[in-house]
Length: 511
Image 1 (spheres, rainbow, N blue to C red):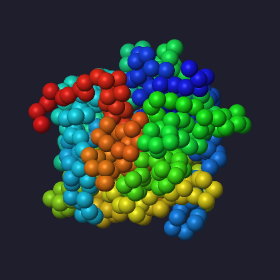
Image 2 (cartoon, rainbow, N blue to C red):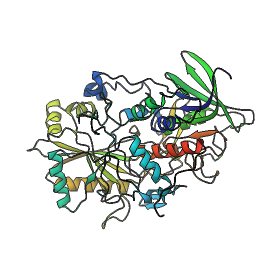
Image 3 (cartoon, one colour):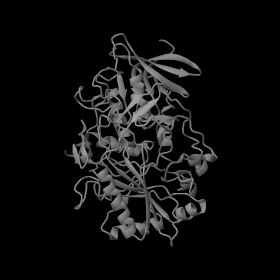
Image 4 (cartoon, helix red, strand yellow):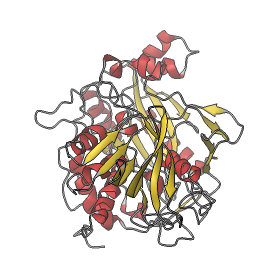
């Protein structure tokens, strides 16, 4: 066997790639994991606001180009083992059953998926177990049916948040326990600190892809990890119908690494860019792009950060991210269209505000942070073929994205502001985020049954390339209005069953 030949190469170690490696760890296959970064260091700066938000210590020195005006922006990506899960908020909800169906919105149509909720439901169970998800079935007013309970009880609300939740319930709302991947198991490592959402976990108590997947996978003698290795192109055989090798840059040199199967999991933007950059004479539009849809239908949610302030009452909460509101997910009596999800953020700290608003006096920002409750307001970003990622002239990333479905998002913001004012918070500030806030990126290689209308098949294999898979959120036909990570994990587990020739798990639920 050639020195650099593997059964499977997985490019990327985030939620998709990390999960796939973990699920294949006992398959006997010789697997190579490629990661362009390194392990994120376990250090004091993990929990320092200035280091994480002021200095952007863990973000790459990279800029993407906004195609609208040619400006450059720093994207919300992290090139480390575990990918963006190293700094995510650890919220792991399931998509709604209706999210898998065609859904009409005020701003257009959210496309149906080629699989149903029931196809993915048993893999959601496995994903929740793998990432030690804490939750409470029955508390979410629009949750899908479950065949198993959550593996661990919900994260308890601190007294201040419990009081606020009671005020929201008095308004007729149904705040629920947000499913969280933090290690509060018996003997677990979580200390319920204020530096979870948006920070790396110095205690390794967050359910991220490195801790839950990559490290256990590397205990297998058949799995190898190359860090500081950038995948430049995927090479095909002469027919152009099979992926043959990955051309990588490692240690200052370029080399080709061959494999029988290649799985791309670089994140929805970089996966599309890699496949577009891999064009050859047999695939002039890029690999897996006979449909012309590769890189198109880029979605990343309509996101607004909302800060509600009660000037006469301080908020002593440390771990704030325990609740969410879905009463408006599919609309209400005043607005019949879907609006989305409102979920608590990790507790705002003064230094985080200073990094975002450097022109405002620090004492004022500090006083505001001590008295605030903080929310993330999230609505669906609808698929639009003109919203796309492209290879820039220097081989980097060029993004063309115009927000849509904004009427529904404004309606959701209005309801979030109203619920907090009714709860006794007279000052409510909101900021709608733009192109740089792409932690929920998806959709650039949608899956489907029709090769003319999709890039991948329902098991995330390219329609065009027989042995090429994409197992990150690129495959999403719609963005829904829920955090995407658990669904990425569940589908990666499903793809792993397929790659091992196992029968796919079927839910015992009735359709």
